[in-house]
Length: 127
Image (cartoon, rainbow, N blue to C red; front, side, top):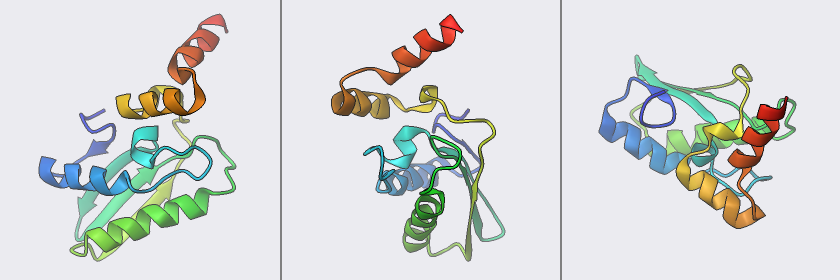
């Protein structure tokens, strides 16, 4: 994984701008943005197209199309140099709390009162 919590071929300045934009899109069920939740797996560019590979916290999420559409719209609005924004929702590898950014982890603790990463690690070590 790159320093951005997702794979990318973008120059650092553009990747940072994309992160800022992605931080404006929130999962409606978990009030943390898609970047800090770790839902973005890859952001790359080729031939005036911005490709985004993302996931959701659970397969079968009824909001999958809604969240993906929001990501596409906010990127199109903020990066008009791209002719196309291609959003692909994937579930392999599956999302785990280990994908949370440090900011996302802290926000989760503030909202829910526990550390989801610690709980996840305890549960998986017992299996």
